[in-house]
Amino acid sequence: MSRYGVKLFDLNRVQSYPLKSRSSKVEVGAFCRPHVKGGALSEFLKSLPAILGAQKLKDLAQAIVSARANGRSILWGMGGHVLKVGLAPVIIDLIDKGFVSSIAMNGSCLVHDFEIAVIGSTSEDVEVQIQTGAFGMAEETGYGINQAIKEGVKDGLGIGESLGRHLLKLEPEFGQYSLLLQAYLRKIPVTVHVTVGADIIHNHPNVSPPDIGEGSHRDFRLFASMVAGLNEGGVYLNCGSAVTLPEVFLKCVTLVRNSGQQLRDFTTANLDFIQHYRPSENVIKRPVANGGRGIALTGHHEIMIPLLAASLIELIDD
Image 1 (cartoon, rainbow, N blue to C red):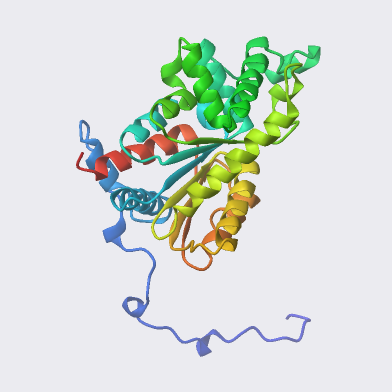
Image 2 (tube, helix red, strand yellow):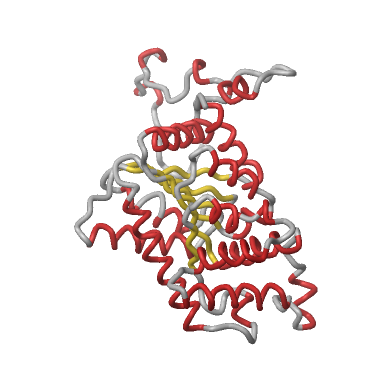
């Protein structure tokens, strides 16, 4: 006998309903199909379930394809990790297929792209290098990038275009893997958005803070012009930048709207292996709150971006 003095709830009073009368979120028609050995990639992509992340991937791919077909901007924001995992060839191929209108980089992305172009490798062992003070002190990286910025800013360029021009003159051995160089050759704008003190080139004796500030601000204004092209059907993808680019993107959105230009009904996406606060708020929520859609895709860049690229290629006729 219980000492609580409270009777158990009477389940005989509960009312049920027929299962088929209920609205359900998942139906067997949305299920995936097993892959067949030797099957085509297009069939594999079609076989993915029309549920959650797989459906979001399909929706994002369709939004990008529609933007391409309708002449709307397709902007890619990138952190350094995207290049560190070897994805430059995929992005360059997407440029050639008309899926990239411009590329926005943070400072880390700039450094890794430059090093890949010059020596074909990047990403030092920070844990080891920091012990002796050698971290970030490679001569070619610090001197070359800073010199390119100074020369470019003097000629009225932003940082992205300055580096593209510099690499063209340099004719680096591995230039075919450089987004900076290959975009420059194709006249695709690349903007670089730095955080002073956060990038290794700021430690170098050849650094020019005024030129870095001027060049990055020019790129900010250039990026704002590209963001204006998102109106009514464009797509912005934030790939691997947890802080800098989401903040810059949000400022560009408000700059465009403050100037009286319409900016609505576009798609934003954040691709990363962790969904952070700023991309969630400043990319996939706030900018499209009054028209458009934000898509969050969680996964490793080295898997998700090639999968997205494959989906895009399979959706077009040319």
